[in-house]
Each structure stands twice: as C-alpha cells, then as structure tokens.
Image (cartoon, rainbow, N blue to C red):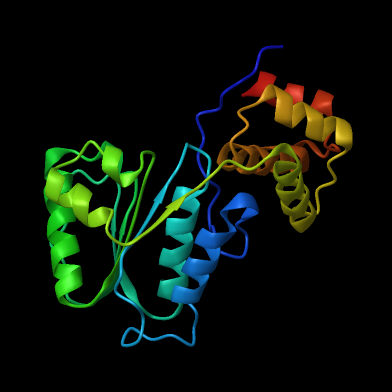
Length: 228
C-alpha cells in the first residue's frame, strides 16, 4: 500500500500546552513568556518575532495558539494568512498582529502586512510572523522582509519519530482511544507524517470507530479509507 498524503490540516483548538516542542523549546518558551497571564499589553515587549521552518513543524499551530491565548485574556488580535484575499485595515485595539504563511502573500496582502507592521510598532504592539523560508529568503517586498527579520527569529524543526509517537499517544489517551503499537506503526508509515495531518487523522479514526462501534485496528482504518 503506497503512502497516502491526506489533504487535511491542523485539528481545531491548538494551544501552547498541546504543542510538543521537542527541538523547538526555545520558541515555545519565548511565546509562553510573552502571553503569560501576568503580563499586560503595557509591559509586554513590542519586539517582533518570526518563526520559520518546513511544513509540519508547528508554525500555524503556534500562531493559532497565541491567538486563542490572547482571546481568552480578552484581547483582540489582527490575523492575516494567505487565504484572506482582502485584509481589513489595521485596528488600534489590536493587542498583537499575527501573520501566517507570509511566503504565500499576494501583493495586496504584502501591502496590508507592511501597513499592519508599521502601525503595530507605532502603537507599541507585538508582531508575530511565520513562513517556510528564513526572513532573508522571503519572496516579499524588501521593506516587509527587513522588518520581519529584525526581531527574535526562531527556526523550527520537524519532530523526530519518538516525539511524533509521544504526541499521538498523548492525543489518543486524551480521547480515550487505545492505539496499539501496530496501529501506530501503520499510521506513521502509511499516511502523511507531518504532525498536523496525523492529529486530524486521529480525529477521523476516533469518529469512525465510534460510529462503527469498532475498536481501532488496522482493518478498521482500512475500512474507513475504503468508505471515504
């Protein structure tokens, strides 16, 4: 059976707590410190941060986790990703600006991102950007590229095999789903190996198992794929 690459994204509700840092501990600690509930908009550092790394290294997870953490504190944030064709104007009440998948931005999105960045810095607001390439290699306008690279820059790395297994096991246990070692091996060798896709696969498996009233086994997963 050849490897399947599922066109699925991150499961809903990413948090800093659910992020398995592995080799990315420095980035997680920096973000956790910034969003700590003891901090306030008045004393949080406005120095921007930038995350870069390959698909599946956790960039979008971390940005969404920061957005939700700030929302839980009652803060409003500006969010821009490549799927927002017409970005809104900058809002003075934003506590932070989050820019995801910057390497995919159109000219219109780049213009908006630059405007947001400048106004955020003017109002002493934080900017967190993320993309696959490092800042110097971003295929965007020069003024946006230089600004995204002048603050804290963190290179994210993919998790190793033991770390992916640990995350899967933890997520399955949280759902009350038992994953045998054979099922774990099957998931890691037959499907897309990036962590976001694996988490979504687990969600699909859990839902299918409950509907079919079956234990999670390799035959059950194969039946799920045949029915999809």
